[in-house]
Image (cartoon, rainbow, N blue to C red):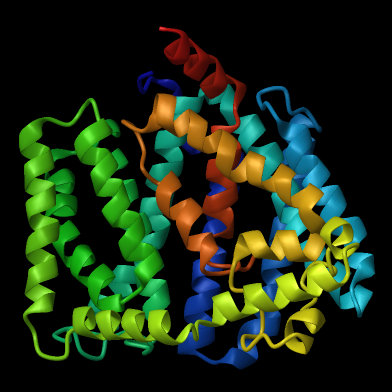
Length: 407
């Protein structure tokens, strides 16, 4: 696989531009809510929903309901149907149905958009998506260094450092920036001074990732570096050594500072392991008790985005804070298995056999949803997560993956 002339037309295509704009509105929505005030949230939510629906209408006008470039699409379409229908089993079905539709319509929009854009070839789209994620999510680390309240601190965990985002956003955004940069730097034709500037900026984003204390982001980048070292066939050994050296140097630079996030996380992890008081774990145990006491929940779920059972059975968080549990507990095990196959199992197979030398974004896009819900269009990772995983289900990647497997 290699980049070709079609990427120029892909980047100019209105369908691609609309997909990028939908990503931008989400990030701007978070920034405006934190920077200007949460009273704007209802207006931002309505604007984003209208824009998604308009984008869906446009791509349907451009290409109809064709999904010929995608494999396994019936899995995700069955998920959308199951999520919609099973919203009615919720304690209060109408709010659950409304929120389910904010998952279903944007997901269908992404499905049709990625299918349309695959006419420009899957590898071109992989690089173009990486470029768009790099540009959109660059606003998160940039905002910290421009507007952060204390750029010399060694721990911002649990704090809103700056005017626009909180520590988790910095962790998630930094992990996406770092790993999309690895693809863009190697496979997209940038001018030398832009490549140099991007490479020199990476240590600062590594620093922000670590001081954010976001364990999902840190774990994602650490695992990605392992794959980069041992499974990447394009980067030379000196590039790998430099990148690993930078990551280790930044880590120890933070660790040696007083009251660093490293010490804080070690203590936090130790406390949670000893006491078992971790909100997601408590919520999981609560829902398993509920499901085991009423076996039909394993088939129907309790209704998407309905947390009545969670609270009744001892959950201490408002929601599951886990995208996969949202589907399992909300829509039951059948819908969950289809979702898991389409969003995790099949993409991981493609990654392992084919794309691991080209892109590592799949790692944070699988891990971060384990620790936060990203199932509605206004959530931080919704658009890159679903766009990337739908791309991993393309017939073209499956074809080349099968060739690799049979070699």
